[in-house]
Each structure stands twice: as structure tokens, then as C-alpha cells.
Length: 117
Length: 113
Image (cartoon, rainbow over all chains, first blue to last red; front, side, top):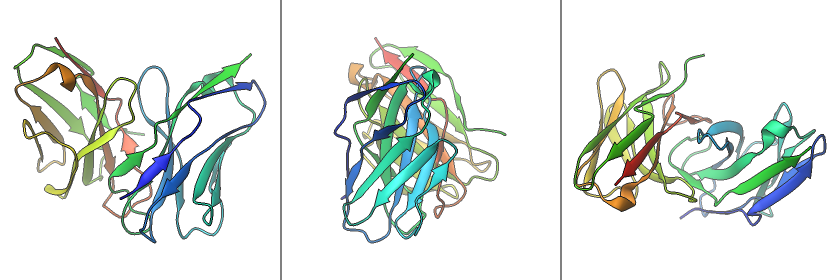
């Protein structure tokens, strides 16, 4: 079984600063995928970034980067130069199965990020 | 770019009624997933389909059923609704089962009164 842990229920960051959202995972599967999603108050689930368990380099997508430390089983999301529009709930999720699979996702409990002006 | 379309966006039903939620995946995506997100909860996987066949099943109540049609759209049918079924229901799609992304629709907010 897979488990995702997000230990920060809420985070505050000043506009234009960087912020790291923590995510640790547990799985016995050697092949897995890690995802980050953003959920604004409007409710939609927005895909941000993906990291495969066999990917050698950390994933980056614009201002988002994933700090993947396989030995520690952590997949922290780093948002650089925070913007007011980044205020939202952020979910870390894991997929089971072969590398790159987008099979069913197991989600963490989320981190509510608030960007302060 | 086309996204995952869910309808309706909002739905209010009374207890014991039935509801049907629809999902239209991104064109050329043949895999559809359904998730349920209760208030203040993380999304929970319900069921998925690949090439019109059920591929995985999660914590979906027996009162719920789903299918994927020949055009790859999917419907989630919910019967004998209970107050606890009030939630945001997401559909996600991906091109095949071996992909690195799952794009979500905007969700259907179901309220059971």
C-alpha cells in the first residue's frame, strides 16, 4: 500500500520569496510516480509537476521544482518567487505500478499555502 | 488546449435520489479515473477505466456504478444518495495507463439534502 504524508497543514510565505512544501512517501513498489497538484478555493485540481522514481534529475516546471530525495523518500515542492495567486491547497500524490504510470493516485492531506503581500 | 469536461458543475439532490455525473476526457485520452473529495479531505480514488473496461476499483460504494462508453466519456451513477455522499467528484484522464500525467476536470460538487 502507498502512503503520502504532508506534515504542514498550513504555510505562510511573503510574496516574491521561495517556499518549500514537504512531502514524504512510503511504498514497497520500486516503480512509482510522484505528483503535485494545486487546488484553489474554486475547487479545480491543477497538475503542477511530476517525478518518476527512476528519473535521475529533479523535475522542474517554470517556478515549480521538485526536490526528489529517493533515499529519504521525500518529494518536496519548491515554489520560487511566490505570487499572490499561488495561495491555494497543495496536494502531493503518488501513483502505483510501473514507472510513469498515471494509475490511481494516493493523495496526502494537503498543505494550505497563503502568500502574504 | 481542450481539458477534461465534467457536467454538471453543481448538483443538489435529496436523500434516496439518484444522480449521474458525466466526464468527457481530453481527446485521445483513453483512461478515465473518478475521485471523491469530501469537505476538508483529500481526494479518494473510486474507480478507473481503460479502453472502456474497468481497470481499477477503489473505495466505491455498491450504490455507485460507472462505465466508459465507446467515445471514451464516462458516467458515474449514484443511487440511494446519502448525506455523506455530499462531496466534490473529480474525473481525471490520461492517454493510456503508462503516462506521467493525470489531468483533472473542474469537478462536480454534489450536495445531498
